[in-house]
Image 1 (tube, rainbow, N blue to C red):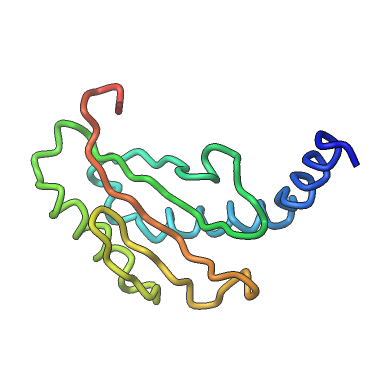
Image 2 (cartoon, rainbow, N blue to C red):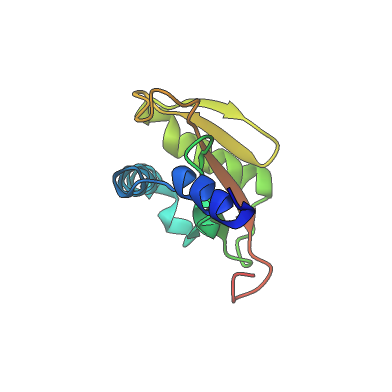
Length: 131
């Protein structure tokens, strides 16, 4: 077998199924809904990691949700992080604090054959363009 067809075949096998992508969107939307208390700070939400770059592979993936608070928010990053934690806590997520992210295990893993988790990353925009 020539190399190019082999690589195309390999990549095709790792492509995410549409139903799995829909499930990920649903999970993302639920977490954003659960984060409603922080909306008072006018954050922006972004898809991060391989999901955001559209480079996910079926063999190993997670979901990264990035939250940028406005550059005018006077709270410390720790206070922003804490507000995210406190918003999610009542919803039954098992959360593992990381340096800049919360790693969430969902109450019912929608991908039982995977070690699936969601990383919620908290940051502060550098300017009004949310860079």
